[in-house]
Image 1 (spheres, rainbow over the protein chains, first blue to last red):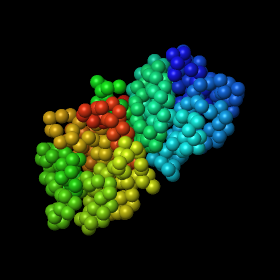
Image 2: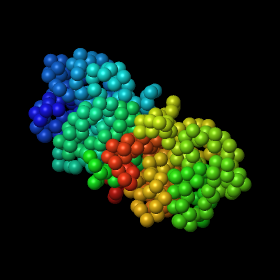
Image 3: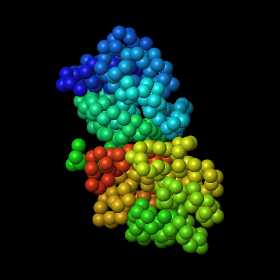
Image 4: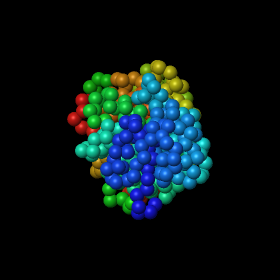
Length: 203
Length: 203
């Protein structure tokens, strides 16, 4: 990544998670294109980085639709395979990870990075609040992961190298656990996760 | 659970994780039976709570072997479905969770609770150290989960209600993520997890 800020297209950028991320990146002075699922294709084509923030049911359809615009780019996929109505129950898809399935679909010409599954949307939307949640960053391409960790850092979130794209299953499953915890403990802000013992480690 | 301390049988109690848990419970003055996989069956039968700490490859065989001794009890299953040599890669079994599969195998007469997957064994073994890791506690039976949360608290660990047994997939997957993080960041103590924003929440 060059030092110039890349343009980020947020698909599903009018939803809670997408608009929160878009707001924070815009605040950090990134050029941000907010797309609904049918966002202008020419605009999407301008972006260097595409962020997918649509509901699970729309994930694959959206990717297939914008596929030509993804070629050679980084696709940050924030999808969590929640299956309503039991969203507090882990229900991973066959194969284990909804995001790994998209990497398999797109092949090597698109570098898919999984991130931001565990960050509560309404915390992102409130710039006055610290989010208190680490971001597990999974992907098979190391420089792409580094790019996403920088994008997280620029909006005040600690991104952590969490292994290959298959490991996205952990972040996806954790979201249902956090929903279960929020419900059980009535946590107003929404629970998050922290990786412990990282301070002082070699980064 | 009565206020008297129940007897705990730790199967695989000579391994790293099992011996660490056994040491801590013994230190908290629980009667602990440490079993290798072929531990004396009469001794196992005395226990009110059985803890499974064997490698994934031995999980099902061990359970089938001790099955008569499990009837009516709580089985705490700490199994992580690591598939060597790629232990830093999430490779959940078909169906999603190794522990949920054991609950399905045993049926309702045994209350299976998933816990302790993310706690580094060598930290458990060192009584002088705080472990700095929350314990995600998953199970379909609420009183059984409460019992396990108390067992965790008695050895200095914060257990958290993390939903039904299916949610064990999240804890199991997280272990590979933590292994990936330990390797990447060279964390001497072993990384752990914390759930944020729980303080002050209704417990």
